[in-house]
Length: 397
Image (cartoon, rainbow, N blue to C red):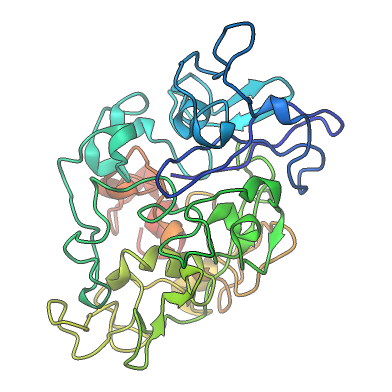
Protein backbone atom coordinates (compact mmCIF):
# COMPACT_ATOMS: atom_id res chain seq x y z
CA UNK A 1 0.00 0.00 0.00
CA UNK A 2 1.52 3.32 -0.93
CA UNK A 3 1.87 5.52 2.08
CA UNK A 4 2.20 8.93 0.53
CA UNK A 5 2.82 12.27 2.23
CA UNK A 6 0.07 14.87 2.16
CA UNK A 7 1.35 18.10 0.69
CA UNK A 8 -0.29 21.43 1.39
CA UNK A 9 -1.13 23.38 -1.72
CA UNK A 10 -0.73 26.65 0.20
CA UNK A 11 2.76 27.42 1.33
CA UNK A 12 2.11 29.39 4.49
CA UNK A 13 -0.60 27.46 6.26
CA UNK A 14 -0.59 24.05 7.85
CA UNK A 15 -3.47 21.79 8.67
CA UNK A 16 -3.97 18.07 8.34
CA UNK A 17 -2.36 14.80 9.28
CA UNK A 18 0.92 13.42 10.60
CA UNK A 19 2.28 9.89 10.45
CA UNK A 20 3.73 7.87 13.26
CA UNK A 21 3.84 4.12 12.75
CA UNK A 22 5.13 1.14 14.69
CA UNK A 23 5.57 -2.43 13.51
CA UNK A 24 2.65 -3.58 15.64
CA UNK A 25 0.18 -0.75 15.45
CA UNK A 26 0.17 0.87 12.03
CA UNK A 27 -0.81 4.44 12.65
CA UNK A 28 -0.60 6.68 9.59
CA UNK A 29 -1.79 10.27 9.56
CA UNK A 30 -0.15 12.46 7.00
CA UNK A 31 0.83 16.04 6.32
CA UNK A 32 3.58 17.90 4.58
CA UNK A 33 3.20 21.65 4.85
CA UNK A 34 5.12 24.58 3.44
CA UNK A 35 7.25 23.82 0.42
CA UNK A 36 6.37 20.66 -1.46
CA UNK A 37 9.85 19.35 -0.67
CA UNK A 38 9.95 20.27 3.03
CA UNK A 39 9.46 18.18 6.15
CA UNK A 40 6.28 18.49 8.17
CA UNK A 41 5.65 21.65 10.15
CA UNK A 42 2.66 23.28 11.78
CA UNK A 43 0.44 23.15 14.84
CA UNK A 44 0.89 19.85 16.68
CA UNK A 45 -2.78 19.73 17.65
CA UNK A 46 -3.75 19.46 13.99
CA UNK A 47 -2.52 15.88 14.11
CA UNK A 48 -2.13 14.90 17.77
CA UNK A 49 -4.37 14.89 20.79
CA UNK A 50 -3.14 14.68 24.37
CA UNK A 51 -6.16 12.91 25.86
CA UNK A 52 -8.40 12.09 22.87
CA UNK A 53 -11.03 14.37 24.32
CA UNK A 54 -12.10 17.95 23.74
CA UNK A 55 -15.29 19.14 25.35
CA UNK A 56 -16.02 15.49 26.20
CA UNK A 57 -15.89 14.63 22.48
CA UNK A 58 -13.42 12.12 20.99
CA UNK A 59 -10.79 13.71 18.77
CA UNK A 60 -10.43 10.99 16.12
CA UNK A 61 -11.15 12.23 12.62
CA UNK A 62 -13.52 9.35 11.89
CA UNK A 63 -15.50 9.86 15.09
CA UNK A 64 -14.32 6.60 16.67
CA UNK A 65 -13.70 6.56 20.39
CA UNK A 66 -10.63 4.27 20.61
CA UNK A 67 -7.42 6.25 21.22
CA UNK A 68 -4.51 5.66 18.84
CA UNK A 69 -0.87 5.04 19.64
CA UNK A 70 1.49 8.01 19.41
CA UNK A 71 -1.45 10.25 20.31
CA UNK A 72 -2.52 10.57 16.69
CA UNK A 73 -6.05 11.45 15.66
CA UNK A 74 -6.55 8.61 13.21
CA UNK A 75 -5.29 5.40 11.63
CA UNK A 76 -3.83 4.80 8.18
CA UNK A 77 -7.10 3.60 6.69
CA UNK A 78 -9.02 6.49 8.22
CA UNK A 79 -6.70 8.86 6.40
CA UNK A 80 -5.73 7.24 3.10
CA UNK A 81 -8.48 4.68 2.54
CA UNK A 82 -11.62 6.67 3.21
CA UNK A 83 -13.52 5.04 0.36
CA UNK A 84 -14.90 8.23 -1.12
CA UNK A 85 -15.31 9.31 -4.69
CA UNK A 86 -12.03 11.11 -5.26
CA UNK A 87 -8.32 10.35 -5.51
CA UNK A 88 -7.64 13.07 -2.93
CA UNK A 89 -9.42 14.39 0.13
CA UNK A 90 -9.11 17.98 1.34
CA UNK A 91 -8.69 18.46 5.09
CA UNK A 92 -8.31 22.12 5.91
CA UNK A 93 -5.53 23.32 3.62
CA UNK A 94 -4.09 19.82 3.19
CA UNK A 95 -4.65 17.46 0.28
CA UNK A 96 -4.59 13.80 1.29
CA UNK A 97 -3.90 11.10 -1.34
CA UNK A 98 -6.31 8.17 -1.37
CA UNK A 99 -5.54 4.53 -2.15
CA UNK A 100 -9.12 3.25 -1.76
CA UNK A 101 -11.84 5.16 -3.60
CA UNK A 102 -14.41 4.96 -6.40
CA UNK A 103 -12.93 7.56 -8.74
CA UNK A 104 -12.48 6.62 -12.38
CA UNK A 105 -8.79 7.56 -12.18
CA UNK A 106 -6.09 6.65 -9.66
CA UNK A 107 -2.78 7.91 -8.33
CA UNK A 108 0.60 6.42 -9.26
CA UNK A 109 0.23 3.32 -7.08
CA UNK A 110 -3.24 2.38 -8.24
CA UNK A 111 -6.42 1.85 -6.22
CA UNK A 112 -7.27 -0.93 -3.77
CA UNK A 113 -10.89 -0.26 -4.74
CA UNK A 114 -10.31 -2.38 -7.84
CA UNK A 115 -9.96 -5.42 -5.57
CA UNK A 116 -13.08 -4.72 -3.53
CA UNK A 117 -15.22 -3.69 -6.50
CA UNK A 118 -15.56 -0.13 -5.25
CA UNK A 119 -14.01 0.96 -8.55
CA UNK A 120 -13.51 -0.54 -11.98
CA UNK A 121 -15.06 -3.53 -13.69
CA UNK A 122 -15.81 -5.64 -10.62
CA UNK A 123 -14.27 -7.14 -7.50
CA UNK A 124 -11.43 -9.64 -7.95
CA UNK A 125 -8.65 -10.72 -5.61
CA UNK A 126 -6.17 -11.11 -8.48
CA UNK A 127 -6.21 -7.40 -9.26
CA UNK A 128 -3.74 -6.36 -6.58
CA UNK A 129 -1.91 -6.77 -3.31
CA UNK A 130 -4.44 -7.93 -0.77
CA UNK A 131 -4.13 -6.42 2.70
CA UNK A 132 -6.48 -8.48 4.83
CA UNK A 133 -7.66 -5.62 7.06
CA UNK A 134 -8.43 -3.49 4.02
CA UNK A 135 -9.47 -5.77 1.15
CA UNK A 136 -10.36 -9.03 2.93
CA UNK A 137 -9.02 -12.55 2.54
CA UNK A 138 -7.28 -13.38 -0.74
CA UNK A 139 -8.89 -16.38 -2.44
CA UNK A 140 -6.25 -16.57 -5.20
CA UNK A 141 -2.79 -16.47 -3.61
CA UNK A 142 -1.19 -17.11 -0.25
CA UNK A 143 2.57 -16.95 -0.84
CA UNK A 144 4.20 -14.21 -2.95
CA UNK A 145 4.39 -15.33 -6.59
CA UNK A 146 7.95 -15.62 -7.81
CA UNK A 147 9.35 -16.14 -4.34
CA UNK A 148 12.76 -17.79 -4.27
CA UNK A 149 13.76 -20.62 -1.97
CA UNK A 150 16.93 -18.83 -0.94
CA UNK A 151 14.96 -16.04 0.74
CA UNK A 152 12.32 -18.44 2.10
CA UNK A 153 9.51 -16.43 0.55
CA UNK A 154 8.46 -19.25 -1.74
CA UNK A 155 5.90 -20.79 0.67
CA UNK A 156 4.52 -17.73 2.45
CA UNK A 157 6.26 -18.62 5.68
CA UNK A 158 7.65 -15.10 6.04
CA UNK A 159 5.18 -12.84 4.23
CA UNK A 160 1.77 -13.94 3.00
CA UNK A 161 -1.61 -12.49 2.13
CA UNK A 162 -2.86 -12.96 5.67
CA UNK A 163 -0.11 -10.95 7.35
CA UNK A 164 0.66 -8.39 4.63
CA UNK A 165 0.42 -4.86 5.96
CA UNK A 166 1.11 -1.31 4.83
CA UNK A 167 4.36 -0.92 6.73
CA UNK A 168 6.76 -2.55 9.11
CA UNK A 169 7.93 -6.16 9.28
CA UNK A 170 5.40 -7.60 6.84
CA UNK A 171 4.75 -4.45 4.87
CA UNK A 172 6.40 -2.37 2.18
CA UNK A 173 6.86 1.06 3.72
CA UNK A 174 9.44 1.88 6.38
CA UNK A 175 11.96 -0.38 8.09
CA UNK A 176 11.45 -4.13 7.74
CA UNK A 177 13.24 -6.77 9.80
CA UNK A 178 15.61 -4.14 11.15
CA UNK A 179 17.73 -4.15 14.31
CA UNK A 180 16.31 -2.76 17.53
CA UNK A 181 17.89 0.64 16.95
CA UNK A 182 15.62 1.15 13.91
CA UNK A 183 11.88 1.66 14.41
CA UNK A 184 9.79 -0.86 12.48
CA UNK A 185 7.48 0.90 10.08
CA UNK A 186 7.58 4.64 9.40
CA UNK A 187 7.67 6.10 12.90
CA UNK A 188 8.58 9.78 12.70
CA UNK A 189 9.28 9.68 8.97
CA UNK A 190 6.96 12.55 8.09
CA UNK A 191 8.97 14.86 10.32
CA UNK A 192 12.04 14.17 8.15
CA UNK A 193 10.27 13.64 4.84
CA UNK A 194 11.93 14.78 1.64
CA UNK A 195 10.61 14.93 -1.91
CA UNK A 196 11.74 15.59 -5.44
CA UNK A 197 15.09 13.96 -6.21
CA UNK A 198 15.81 11.22 -3.65
CA UNK A 199 19.31 9.96 -4.31
CA UNK A 200 20.46 8.91 -0.81
CA UNK A 201 17.69 6.69 0.59
CA UNK A 202 19.46 5.65 3.79
CA UNK A 203 16.45 6.18 6.05
CA UNK A 204 12.68 6.20 5.72
CA UNK A 205 12.22 9.94 5.33
CA UNK A 206 14.63 10.33 2.41
CA UNK A 207 13.60 7.16 0.55
CA UNK A 208 11.19 7.14 -2.37
CA UNK A 209 7.63 7.04 -0.97
CA UNK A 210 9.01 5.75 2.35
CA UNK A 211 10.22 2.54 0.66
CA UNK A 212 13.47 2.28 2.59
CA UNK A 213 16.49 2.12 0.33
CA UNK A 214 14.59 2.95 -2.89
CA UNK A 215 15.83 5.92 -4.89
CA UNK A 216 13.81 7.98 -7.34
CA UNK A 217 12.13 11.27 -8.15
CA UNK A 218 8.71 11.98 -6.59
CA UNK A 219 6.08 13.87 -8.53
CA UNK A 220 4.72 16.52 -6.17
CA UNK A 221 1.06 15.53 -6.70
CA UNK A 222 1.45 11.73 -6.64
CA UNK A 223 0.72 11.77 -10.38
CA UNK A 224 -2.81 13.04 -9.84
CA UNK A 225 -2.36 15.09 -13.00
CA UNK A 226 0.38 13.11 -14.70
CA UNK A 227 1.57 13.91 -18.20
CA UNK A 228 4.43 12.58 -20.30
CA UNK A 229 6.56 15.38 -18.87
CA UNK A 230 5.25 15.38 -15.28
CA UNK A 231 5.51 12.04 -13.52
CA UNK A 232 7.50 9.97 -11.05
CA UNK A 233 10.95 8.82 -12.07
CA UNK A 234 12.49 5.50 -11.03
CA UNK A 235 16.02 4.13 -10.72
CA UNK A 236 17.19 1.01 -12.53
CA UNK A 237 20.31 -0.94 -13.46
CA UNK A 238 21.38 -1.55 -17.05
CA UNK A 239 21.39 -5.32 -16.43
CA UNK A 240 19.94 -7.61 -13.73
CA UNK A 241 22.21 -9.16 -11.10
CA UNK A 242 22.10 -12.16 -8.77
CA UNK A 243 20.05 -11.46 -5.65
CA UNK A 244 19.47 -13.44 -2.48
CA UNK A 245 19.82 -13.38 1.28
CA UNK A 246 23.59 -13.69 1.75
CA UNK A 247 26.64 -15.60 0.58
CA UNK A 248 27.18 -17.56 -2.59
CA UNK A 249 28.41 -14.53 -4.50
CA UNK A 250 24.97 -12.91 -4.64
CA UNK A 251 23.90 -9.43 -3.56
CA UNK A 252 21.97 -9.61 -0.30
CA UNK A 253 18.67 -7.82 0.26
CA UNK A 254 19.48 -7.90 3.97
CA UNK A 255 21.71 -4.89 3.49
CA UNK A 256 22.64 -4.01 7.06
CA UNK A 257 21.16 -3.46 10.51
CA UNK A 258 18.54 -1.25 8.88
CA UNK A 259 16.87 -4.39 7.56
CA UNK A 260 15.62 -5.61 4.19
CA UNK A 261 16.41 -3.19 1.37
CA UNK A 262 17.24 -3.21 -2.35
CA UNK A 263 21.06 -3.39 -2.47
CA UNK A 264 21.32 -1.02 -5.46
CA UNK A 265 18.33 1.16 -4.63
CA UNK A 266 16.17 0.19 -7.61
CA UNK A 267 12.42 -0.32 -7.56
CA UNK A 268 12.74 -3.75 -9.18
CA UNK A 269 15.18 -4.91 -6.51
CA UNK A 270 12.75 -3.68 -3.87
CA UNK A 271 9.99 -5.85 -5.34
CA UNK A 272 12.53 -8.68 -5.53
CA UNK A 273 12.67 -8.85 -1.73
CA UNK A 274 9.43 -10.86 -2.01
CA UNK A 275 9.19 -11.73 -5.73
CA UNK A 276 12.82 -12.64 -6.29
CA UNK A 277 12.57 -15.01 -9.25
CA UNK A 278 11.10 -12.24 -11.38
CA UNK A 279 14.13 -9.99 -10.83
CA UNK A 280 17.30 -12.01 -10.28
CA UNK A 281 19.65 -13.90 -12.50
CA UNK A 282 19.97 -17.64 -11.85
CA UNK A 283 21.46 -18.53 -8.47
CA UNK A 284 22.94 -21.98 -7.87
CA UNK A 285 21.89 -24.68 -10.32
CA UNK A 286 18.70 -22.88 -11.29
CA UNK A 287 16.34 -25.28 -9.54
CA UNK A 288 13.61 -23.21 -7.90
CA UNK A 289 12.71 -25.77 -5.26
CA UNK A 290 16.26 -26.51 -4.11
CA UNK A 291 17.46 -24.67 -0.99
CA UNK A 292 19.57 -21.65 -1.88
CA UNK A 293 18.73 -21.72 -5.59
CA UNK A 294 16.54 -19.85 -8.05
CA UNK A 295 16.12 -19.92 -11.81
CA UNK A 296 15.37 -16.20 -11.95
CA UNK A 297 15.05 -14.54 -15.36
CA UNK A 298 17.87 -16.63 -16.79
CA UNK A 299 21.53 -17.42 -16.38
CA UNK A 300 22.84 -14.29 -18.11
CA UNK A 301 21.57 -10.78 -18.73
CA UNK A 302 20.69 -11.21 -22.39
CA UNK A 303 18.14 -13.08 -24.46
CA UNK A 304 16.76 -15.72 -24.43
CA UNK A 305 15.20 -15.14 -21.01
CA UNK A 306 12.88 -17.57 -19.24
CA UNK A 307 11.05 -14.75 -17.42
CA UNK A 308 10.62 -11.16 -18.56
CA UNK A 309 13.68 -9.27 -17.24
CA UNK A 310 13.70 -6.09 -15.17
CA UNK A 311 16.52 -3.67 -14.41
CA UNK A 312 17.59 -4.03 -18.03
CA UNK A 313 18.24 -1.19 -20.50
CA UNK A 314 16.14 -1.25 -23.63
CA UNK A 315 18.28 -2.17 -26.65
CA UNK A 316 19.13 0.78 -28.87
CA UNK A 317 18.48 -1.30 -31.97
CA UNK A 318 15.54 -3.01 -33.61
CA UNK A 319 11.99 -2.49 -32.44
CA UNK A 320 13.04 -1.04 -29.07
CA UNK A 321 14.80 1.93 -30.66
CA UNK A 322 11.40 3.35 -31.62
CA UNK A 323 10.32 3.88 -28.00
CA UNK A 324 11.52 7.48 -27.55
CA UNK A 325 8.51 9.31 -26.05
CA UNK A 326 7.64 8.52 -22.42
CA UNK A 327 4.43 6.50 -22.18
CA UNK A 328 2.59 6.78 -18.85
CA UNK A 329 1.02 3.38 -19.50
CA UNK A 330 4.43 1.75 -19.93
CA UNK A 331 6.94 3.83 -17.92
CA UNK A 332 10.69 3.27 -17.96
CA UNK A 333 13.36 3.78 -15.30
CA UNK A 334 16.65 5.70 -15.47
CA UNK A 335 20.21 4.66 -14.71
CA UNK A 336 20.67 7.75 -12.51
CA UNK A 337 18.06 9.56 -10.43
CA UNK A 338 17.07 12.69 -12.38
CA UNK A 339 16.36 16.07 -10.83
CA UNK A 340 13.10 16.39 -12.76
CA UNK A 341 10.79 14.29 -14.85
CA UNK A 342 11.33 13.94 -18.59
CA UNK A 343 9.12 13.21 -21.58
CA UNK A 344 11.95 11.49 -23.44
CA UNK A 345 13.07 7.86 -23.48
CA UNK A 346 16.63 6.93 -24.45
CA UNK A 347 16.98 3.33 -25.73
CA UNK A 348 20.33 1.89 -24.80
CA UNK A 349 20.13 3.59 -21.41
CA UNK A 350 16.60 3.78 -19.98
CA UNK A 351 15.41 0.49 -18.57
CA UNK A 352 12.41 -1.75 -18.14
CA UNK A 353 11.33 -2.36 -14.54
CA UNK A 354 8.50 -4.08 -12.68
CA UNK A 355 6.36 -0.92 -12.78
CA UNK A 356 6.69 -0.77 -16.55
CA UNK A 357 3.91 -3.36 -16.62
CA UNK A 358 2.35 -3.40 -13.14
CA UNK A 359 0.84 -1.01 -10.60
CA UNK A 360 2.11 -1.38 -7.05
CA UNK A 361 -1.25 -1.47 -5.20
CA UNK A 362 -3.91 -2.67 -7.58
CA UNK A 363 -5.20 -2.13 -11.09
CA UNK A 364 -8.45 -2.97 -12.89
CA UNK A 365 -6.73 -5.88 -14.66
CA UNK A 366 -5.55 -9.30 -13.48
CA UNK A 367 -2.04 -9.50 -12.02
CA UNK A 368 -2.05 -5.76 -11.35
CA UNK A 369 -1.22 -5.08 -15.01
CA UNK A 370 -1.51 -1.55 -16.34
CA UNK A 371 -3.44 -2.75 -19.41
CA UNK A 372 -5.70 -5.56 -20.62
CA UNK A 373 -3.35 -8.41 -21.51
CA UNK A 374 -6.07 -10.04 -23.62
CA UNK A 375 -5.77 -7.13 -26.06
CA UNK A 376 -2.05 -7.68 -26.59
CA UNK A 377 -2.48 -9.58 -29.86
CA UNK A 378 0.66 -9.86 -31.96
CA UNK A 379 0.07 -8.93 -35.59
CA UNK A 380 -3.53 -7.87 -34.99
CA UNK A 381 -3.64 -5.52 -32.03
CA UNK A 382 -6.18 -3.18 -33.60
CA UNK A 383 -7.02 -0.32 -31.25
CA UNK A 384 -4.40 -1.56 -28.79
CA UNK A 385 -1.55 -0.92 -31.25
CA UNK A 386 1.22 1.12 -29.68
CA UNK A 387 -0.04 0.48 -26.15
CA UNK A 388 0.95 -1.88 -23.35
CA UNK A 389 3.52 -4.44 -24.47
CA UNK A 390 3.74 -2.72 -27.85
CA UNK A 391 5.16 0.48 -26.34
CA UNK A 392 8.49 -1.36 -26.25
CA UNK A 393 7.83 -4.15 -28.77
CA UNK A 394 6.92 -1.60 -31.40
CA UNK A 395 6.88 -3.90 -34.44
CA UNK A 396 4.84 -6.77 -33.03
CA UNK A 397 1.38 -5.14 -33.03
